[in-house]
Image (cartoon, rainbow, N blue to C red; front, side, top):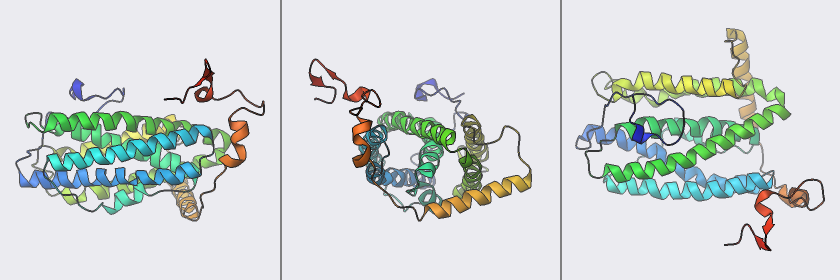
Length: 297
């Protein structure tokens, strides 16, 4: 099983690479790792999208989350830049699948599901399962790299938790989202194999790459399990026509979401959000203790 030292606090079972590791002195392995790390670097660069999310935050809780996430993602960007320097690598452009899965969505119900719950969940699979297990500790550069990755993993877990929490809330408020959500999960799983096609020819003999089919199936199974727990994927597999209908519905909603515009609302709701109109208790973060704000440095 995966090394206990490479777990980051999640109880989720990791995929077992059976001790397979990259050879950081091999040009072939370095090129593959450069590709993987380049996708991660691009994903962290999209942290700038948090600015749009902060602008359109529907609550103070959401605003605080996106403010915190923006700081974390930009810090992650620097951490991955450090990793590139430590490994003496130069980044590649992002793969089209990563660009698609990382794209910002102004339609909040799709943002929390596709970007946070599902998207960042798959990022965690790459970091925790693939990189933390397969980077060789025998290389003197790797322990510090893994330390950086564990920091990233802990914070990405927060982002996934936020996405799951908001997805559950939205499904409770808007049950009609369940069908397009399911269709979108199926569509995301359908494009996933395109990411690994470039390595299929090498997969048979390479100690790490030969695990790609199993790892891909592990990711798919985890996403379906996560989606079932969120109430998106039916417990019993739907018929092919129903699945196709859901995918069509999901695709239509995704296309429609591309025309959504960010709208600021907090300037209209801040009084009630702060509990100053008596409609709700004040947020915990805003409670003053001994006359000192909880936000005071």
